[in-house]
Length: 178
Image (tube, rainbow, N blue to C red):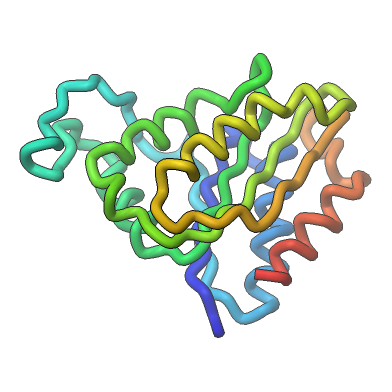
């Protein structure tokens, strides 16, 4: 059965290492017959949550930007792929702002399969533990969430260094397995 896959590429660099892995995941998922959309978060206008809680009464965020459109895509997706480079042992600001902004309709985000993609200059996976914990923390707030896979792109800093790493094959294969 075909699934609706939404890839949220947090990479601030177009064709950066985590963005390249998103493309490979997407290639595999499309080849398997899924409906796939990749959003580059940095190309969207998404402000940070101001904790005004206007959404508590209305279900609508008071900030008027691209988040309402992205939020509906998140709700409609069967599969969410969260991808980020590791910045100071955590996810980047662009993706974190998006995650925080889901608060306006977070109870509508249900029954999602989650995949996580991370890249880091460090060659050890332990430097990605906090990033993975951030991803898992969000999924813990999603009713019926299921973690399906994690891709660790280690030892990459310069754009394109991921191209000769095993994470490329893993991303493609994981996408095919959706």
